[in-house]
Amino acid sequence: MKVICPQCKKEHSIDESKIPATAKVAQCKACGYRFFLQRAKHSEPEDQASLPAYPRRIGVTLSKGGVGKTTTSVNLAAGLALAGFKVLLVDTDTQGQAAYLLGQKTQVGLTELVTGELPAEETIVQARENLWLLAGGRSLAGIKRLIDRKDFGGELTLLEALESVEKHYDYVIVDTSPGWDPLTVNVLFYVNELITPVSLEVMTLQGLVEFLKSLSSVQKYRSEVALNYILPTFLDNRVKNPRAILDRLKELYGDLICTPIRYNVRLSEAPAYGKTIYEYAPGSHGSLDYRELVRKISGNPKLFL
Image 1 (tube, one colour):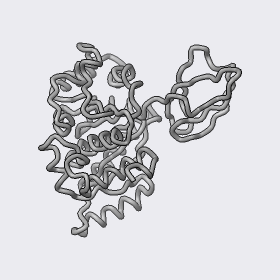
Image 2: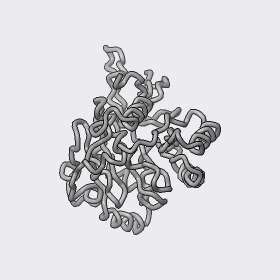
Image 3: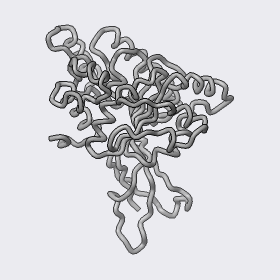
């Protein structure tokens, strides 16, 4: 039988007789993407387009703060939801700002799901049409201690909690905290793709280099996770230095560089109203730039046009 990876579209020829009868999931050897495996009926042709894929797991992370991680996580998730995808936004930051940006007042969230105190339907809230939120907050400090106390398998704590709920979504977007802590490591053992927002300043470039070193240490044990996108943020064309840094990024990282997010005061104003940039200022540079990011991530250049 022939199986086509829903993500990278690589075709694999598989001897169906060698697939265990209980096998339900396949993993692409080319890109590491996992998806549901459905065998064709003997009398019917295979229709790969009908295969329900696992959600794309995307982490938004960098160990340095103030680069626009939460702004990117929220507006990427909201943009994908506007495009018609079912999206779960997971906040792993103890500051819990994703809920604030979406105008949500949550009492429970990721902590209760991980500990099993509450079922998924009581911890996940619908924030917008097609967009659901698993909130973070100060209680996540207890999850970090829980992970540290485990004799083994602590790095899989988040994976074990989310695998039971992710099947309902097309995308799972995970926002992370600054720094390098047990929850950040857990995110890297869960997601397959990474977006790294990089504010266009020299100190952030140093932070990117340090993050890549830390990421390589995780990739020794989990090769599936990869840095797929570097997102330049706070581009101000009125200032010379950011443009020079952007050119340097393109020189070093080439195709990984996304269209920059231009400096836009509307992006900083929107959270005060609990609105996404598409709701608060749909015609602003911030809205246009994040729509471009959604097009790149989804692989559909015609979205919103």
